[in-house]
Length: 332
Image (cartoon, rainbow, N blue to C red; front, side, top):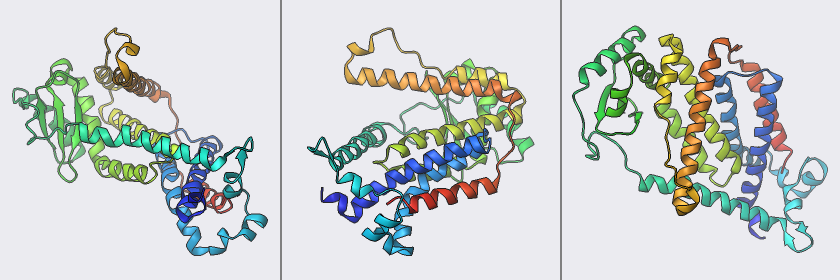
């Protein structure tokens, strides 16, 4: 395939290989350095999204000879072009299989990440999609005061929407607004609601509203890369685990947050998902995935009192990043 031998084709092939290398080396680092806390894992996994994007153009600038046949034959540990030019059973070029993989994951990205943005409705005070309820203002103000005053942070605004599903998220960048459904305010006790709101306050303190779009941008730049798909999800989950742990350190009540998280379980009906077509099957998979994540968060919270962590260490992190860059340089 001609595309594979272009700059764009080389970038695509090498960025995928570099992402796999980064993933493997990061996982080895977790084991070698006994890294178990999610804050450290969050930072290490960012390497798997950032380095594959910049390594190829960086190498092109500082070492143009890296792309020459002599470097490939005498220095490189792995030559992707040689493998992509091979044929499977002497019939199908490996490049065709690789291109098909890129198309599949690109299509998956469009269907799972892009189309829902256009189909979904964004909840905001001005949207008019939901009716705002003021009956719970006094309780919300009281709980937010109890959370924010000891932390010495500005109390965010909030909106209680008339919705029977469990909804709780934070929007905004400099000025944050907590959006919560009346269903949650009604069903959660004070301690459970305080735990859930503290989790959202921690997101604000960690500037998650700025970090998440940046991480999503990295994911978009590697839309064809299967490693980026996996690592993006894991990074987002790590961020949730971090906020859970900090929220518990603030409230000193893990059971309250566990009970609050249990309210977010989705229950599908008893209909066989195979009988509802592709949309029904996708909905069933999404519900199952959502519940699995909640179960993992709850399990982590239950283990938290006995968890041991050495904190983030800069030297192992820099060594891991350096090894990833060196290995990427030798894989062309």
